[in-house]
Image (tube, rainbow, N blue to C red):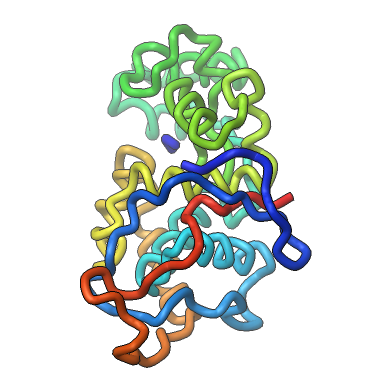
Length: 264
């Protein structure tokens, strides 16, 4: 639920605008399989247009490992409720609110949960994401309500909006609603993945570790595992390797900055 890329200006590739990016970082070589480059942009008719666009973004980010791509799609799919929810749904029942947030001490008991639900979604966000929620950087209850989960990866908290905005050259602190735009949601998700997620864990299929990196716990772990297996079935196997395609130390040589991610 928590949630680097170059200036907004870009160059046109076909019908798409591409951010020229900044200096490449976090290009982790694949220890388990070596492919000749990004997998095909269209992985088959069973993938939705949104899933196919996200695969293209992974191409631009030089993320070609099949396991990692399947893990990315599985995680952001769960976070965004099948890519349909780019703003966190805080319409909890008292019982569900207590179940989700009692462990962290943010909701005391059922009576407390009932009072919060009666106060509305801002009251819920102000409590569960307020200053008491360490690591989010929210200064008060208003920040908790303002910087709720948004985007495909549900970016949450003032600190995360500030970091993503600085990296992407966007005023996400002043305009957090920008993360609800699918183009920006894609860039934010890739930024978060490169900056905050253990890519080695993703490449060996460690769903629990990646889930913890994304939402700080194990919420929806069973469903994340199911979707990861599904995407492994849907994504094509990597093409055969030819010796001439490989860099002697790092494997395939990416030719596009991992920050060329903007969709305008």
